[in-house]
Length: 389
Image 1 (cartoon, rainbow, N blue to C red):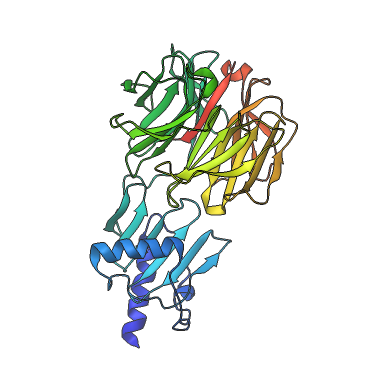
Image 2 (cartoon, rainbow, N blue to C red):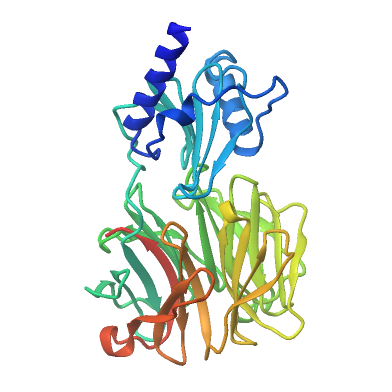
């Protein structure tokens, strides 16, 4: 009994030392074990399988209880014979500690470290909003409240969508005018061409862990008049076609890497669709009979899909399977792309007719201007991304 109590005390101390895990009250760890029929589910099951393969099944061991959710703290816990499994909504990674080391299934797959160390990607919440402006041919950034606006890149052709690899300090974007996908450091230095000779690239998303970038071709800006989804390595090599048929006017693109799914909006067919990351098993998720879906963002932890409907001038959301559609923000003028700050509970979007970037709570309340024509010279704000300077 004394040995068991000492082990649990060690786990308490270890958890308090983990930079990416919320401090847990000691009594939670001393909760009585559940019945022998407890199981591992979803992210915890995936993490256990990864650790089993890397370290052996005895590392995590058997479950001592079913997972316990704490909505107030935004975390889920599960004790095992080897230690403690933890998931936090704020960063959406799963982790396991044995009291000395931590294993995390993060953006680069399974990694381990001492509890007193941190991974390079264990960063603070986003502090900076990046956007493209197809009217001024710039990429700009500002603090999340709109202060300290600065140019990142100028003299571009038609910069469209953005994606950030914060851990590597890289900014990626599509340029519809030059037919390129490019990247640079977050301050705009060291610009490099990754993929060239494209036909109207627009939407963009990164799977950093797998070393892949995904993009869409907007059909009506292409020579063929049809849309297409492709991917390549992060350095632009090994370009491959994913979805090439029955597409029209593609814009927003988003990944649910954990589930192995790729989502996109098609303004021409008025559909939101998804497929496996290799482009197989295409299926309709949302049909908008009178709308024109444009921007797209996922809150995977909450099982939510957000999109902008430029036709009905709404921001809407649904479950990831397309069920339970609801209006979030109404009465917009000409909304374009959007981005989510899930940790802060905020939704950002661009409105072309108002020359503004706005934000609201994830339920649509408390709408406010963040960046305007007066503060940043906005003309046609297009892609949005959240990160660090």
